[in-house]
Picture (cartoon, rainbow, N blue to C red):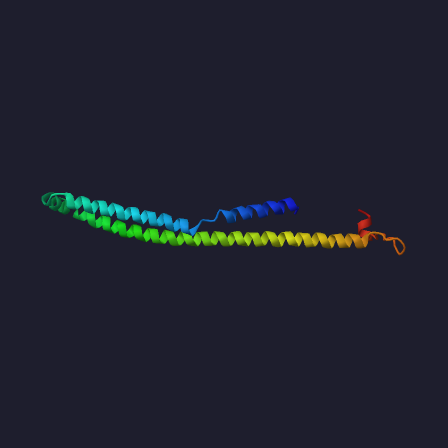
Length: 148
């Protein structure tokens, strides 16, 4: 594993850490959505008060089932938003944890390879012939290997 590969992995991990979602931005987006829903409800209420009473009565009778359905849909949408917020938080936390795990793994692997290279360098240095007390090492083959 060369230093360039390790450097690329470290850079990718750093980029992934920089791209983490900001919980404040997520909360602000959800708050804006809630404000818009409330604004829609306010406009609908003001429109209702501006209509003549006879038209209001007719509309109430005509749209009563729809109003119930709309209220149910609003409640379900609030549940969906709550669940999506929770899922988003869990996914972001899990992603951040995996990025941290990956960073640790890259560090462990690269330090392991560096240690292996250091140990091999020491072994190679120890095996180099020295002046003075050097000995020649001959390879002895087994009889079953000599024929092949």
